[in-house]
Image 1 (spheres, protein in one colour):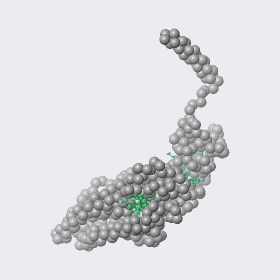
Image 2 (tube, protein in one colour):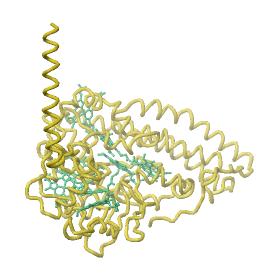
Image 3 (cartoon, helix red, strand yellow):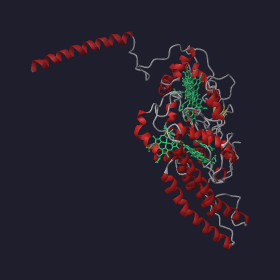
Image 4 (tube, rainbow, N blue to C red):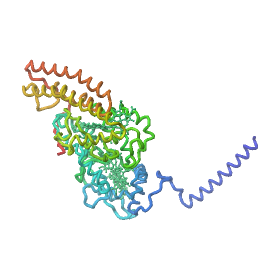
Length: 457
Ligand code: HEC
Ligand code: HEC
Ligand code: HEC
Ligand code: HEC
Ligand code: HEC
Ligand code: HEC
Ligand code: HEC
Ligand code: HEC
């Protein structure tokens, strides 16, 4: 036992000496290479010297970003940093500061680059997706918001609330300042950001840089960033639905990365996610980046209407065709009877909501304004204005959204149930005001409200 230990000790000492000497020799010869963050990852073959400069230098500065690209489909498809970031010398947004990186000549000739990569750039290779997205409501949301007169959009929130709330989802107007992107307007990956080249949107809303993965966009969590919460609870509704339950139970086995052609119902996935019903190619139903192509109602609106009658951005497709497209998706896994009865209920929910709740409440508001009992100049500063908004914008939208996608808690408990309680209270308060004949007293709203905004359009 003791002998073994002593022997072991001698052996370790000898080994340590050998290592120390080898290390010394190595040190005098050349320093041991530092393990790079991308250790074990090969750069794609055939990289040009210019592209290699971007990759090598940025691997030092932002390894996470470059490894994302190395792992993306683009890296293997000769779509390098240059294909997306290279710009003409005088293009808007060329980063003049970046040219300093090339000082000393070690990195080859200076390449003008922009930080913003707009859909226009992606469109050089993905023409269809970009054309579809450009006509979608998501891309055009800033224009839509500025044309709507629900009152709230342009009159309630202050600038700070707008920038840190609304525009994170809806998108900023990206500006150029002193030779680079104006930091007060970027980063922004809101769906409708306006780019310096005039194009609309950010493809990284759903395909984050630099993976740009379809697998990621097919997950409901990609949509959840924006489509959740009290006034647009699509994620919560989906997770409550049977389809959501199956996504949780078997999603681990779905073939998320399959090509559009191989993303087949039953084979690549058992139940649909947001992407399947709204975007994917499903058999004969063509894939699209314009979700309106499958919608027969607008339900984010105070009153349910057909998309072609939505004035700020009328759909180019008739609702009957859109409905047929959506039914085409369902038909891959359900019989016509199942699908027809589902949509018959959904249509009835919209008509019921309009006639029993929205229309009488809206008629009452009209009467109050006409008699001068409410003041139309400022929205939301009188109790009844707030009550009216709270009717349609919360339970009103929730009831309809729940019925659209199979979430009964949203249809009933935080939808129709809440309407049932709030509606008579609203009407009683309104009748009392009518009877009194006295102008309603306005609230004084917290700072920020009613600051003038420069509208994007
Ligand atoms: C020698 C190192 C080096 C090389 C080569 C290099 N970069 Fe950079 N790059 C940087 C550094 C450092 C920054 C951050 C400093 C800054 O914001 O100007 C940066 C910033 C950027 C930005 C963000 C700019 C902004 O305004 O926020 C982009 C995009 C970019 N580089 C892309 C590229 C591309 C594409 C190439 C190849 C054509 C490239 N870089 C080559 C070092 C380099
Ligand atoms: C397929 C197109 C594409 C490729 C290829 C690409 N980028 Fe980008 N890059 C983008 C997009 C999109 C953004 C997000 C900027 C925006 O909002 O427009 C971005 C952002 C950046 C930023 C700023 C991001 C941040 O978080 O600070 C840097 C730096 C950058 N890219 C460098 C690179 C480098 C280096 C490479 C090559 C290894 C590369 N990019 C390859 C499209 C691309
Ligand atoms: C120079 C051409 C080129 C440019 C520019 C380009 N791509 Fe690609 N992209 C490709 C090729 C090639 C593929 C692989 C073939 C395919 O799947 O269509 C691809 C694949 C993709 C995929 C599917 C990836 C997967 O496997 O999951 C997405 C998503 C994508 N690109 C988004 C973008 C976005 C967003 C931009 C702009 C920021 C962009 N691309 C710019 C050429 C390009
Ligand atoms: C969490 C992300 C998010 C935030 C924050 C947000 N929105 Fe939205 N907004 C959405 C989504 C998602 C929709 C679409 C709902 C639908 O179509 O069912 C929407 C819809 C709208 C609409 C209706 C558009 C139409 O077509 O009728 C308006 C107006 C609007 N938002 C304005 C605002 C304003 C103003 C703010 C800030 C005070 C804001 N939003 C904050 C995500 C957001
Ligand atoms: C609102 C979310 C969203 C936005 C924004 C978005 N995409 Fe997609 N994209 C998706 C979804 C979901 C898929 C997967 C569709 C499917 O299942 O085949 C996809 C798939 C793709 C594919 C793969 C297509 C194929 O045939 O396999 C490309 C390429 C692509 N998107 C490019 C873009 C470009 C370019 C933009 C910007 C104009 C963009 N996307 C913006 C959600 C989005
Ligand atoms: C970064 C925020 C954001 C993300 C991520 C996002 N959306 Fe949206 N989406 C919006 C906003 C904002 C609107 C409202 C546009 C308007 O009406 O002004 C909207 C509208 C929609 C509409 C109704 C618009 C129409 O065309 O009639 C659908 C359907 C939709 N989104 C589906 C999706 C799906 C599916 C995903 C995920 C693959 C997704 N969205 C991801 C912000 C987002
Ligand atoms: C089983 C298919 C299915 C799934 C899964 C699904 N939806 Fe829907 N979605 C629908 C149908 C059907 C409608 C109503 C269609 C109509 O207008 O006739 C709808 C309506 C919508 C609307 C339109 C509301 C409006 O403003 O008019 C949005 C936004 C939306 N879905 C987003 C999502 C998001 C985000 C997810 C995932 C979290 C999702 N959907 C999952 C089928 C689906
Ligand atoms: C990829 C296959 C697939 C697609 C596409 C699909 N579903 Fe389903 N759906 C299922 C499966 C599987 C079930 C579970 C059936 C069961 O309960 O045994 C289901 C369940 C349902 C349920 C039952 C809800 C309940 O709790 O009773 C409804 C309603 C439904 N789907 C409607 C639709 C509608 C509407 C569409 C199209 C907008 C659609 N589905 C698209 C696979 C699909």
